[in-house]
Amino acid sequence: MISYPMLSKKILIFTGAALLASATAFAQVQPGGGGGPGGGQTPNTPGQPGIGQPGGIAPGGNGGLSTQTMNDKAFVREALEGGMAEVQLGQLASQKASSDDVKQFGQKMVEDHTKLGNAMSEVAQQVGVKPPDGLSKKDKQLIAKMQTLSGPQFDEAYIKAMVKDHKKDDNAFKMEAQQAENPAVRQVAQQGEPIVASHLQMIEQIAQAHNVEGGKAKSGGGMQ
Image (cartoon, rainbow, N blue to C red; front, side, top):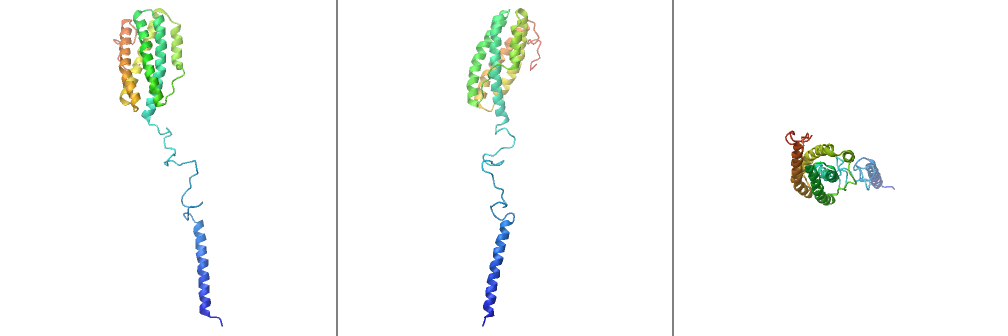
């Protein structure tokens, strides 16, 4: 005879095993049910780190550089470019100016800005700034214009250009001497600031002596 209690036990075991298998299969296809595809965690694609993760792209798009670091680099680049123009214009002035004071100022620009440019080039290497290949378009146009002038006309145009440029440069060097983030940039700005300030004072006095607009007596200071 068949024992019914034994049959009931077998049915219960079979039913329990079937239910367990169904529950396991159900869990595998539900969201959050494991680390595989379709799980609760979104996998990262190799080589594509997410924002906020190590190696990820930081919000802002500046490659991690602060605003002041970018300002430091721009200052060095513009100082190198402007210094090249000062040297070439100074060479023209020492050759073409009709007044001795303008000639002497031009020669001083060659000497001082050559030294300052050498110091700035060393800093450029330290902060990763590529020296300019040549003059800016604006400076090229100014030099081309100056080459067509002579005598008092040259003197007046050169004086005006130097007053304008040195007011701008003086402000830039003063600001970087106080705010530069990079120690090397701050140091070269602090060393160059009194030199540029003395140039501004000299050219304003020359402008006043030649009755050229921009002289110290007629200028209210600041950038034009």
